[in-house]
Image (cartoon, rainbow, N blue to C red; front, side, top):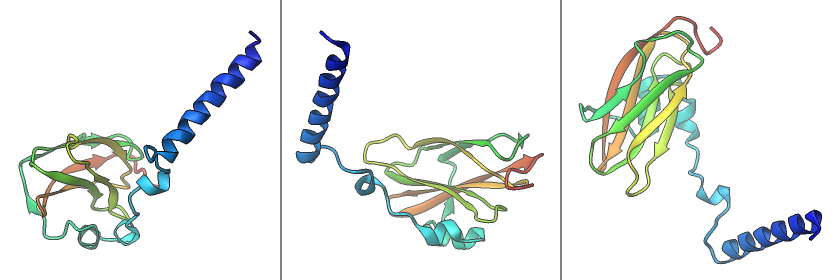
Length: 156
């Protein structure tokens, strides 16, 4: 069989299967699946406002949140952050960098039954507290750790 014809038939079959899945409601567009962007929280310029606007205001300290960050980050442009929430019913995890111009670095929604674990990288302009906030059971919890930055990642 001609290779071009085989590739065409294979591609057509895949496209048809995707169209059937979309028509059946099994696949949704990225816009539908994406959470709404909380512009107010992500543009707040101090930690208290950012936490309040992201619905983590009044969070209480918890030892059930495990945050792993380096004590010293040689390059603030890429600081690894690993978070595990051992609080039952965790529905979201947010990462704040207190001395950044906009402290809210990330906010993750946790689907039902998903393990409340996040591993990502954040930018840090200077030595600062990295604060993690967790929402579970309608309450907010937090923990923080200082990271010393030797070379700033936010233009420093």
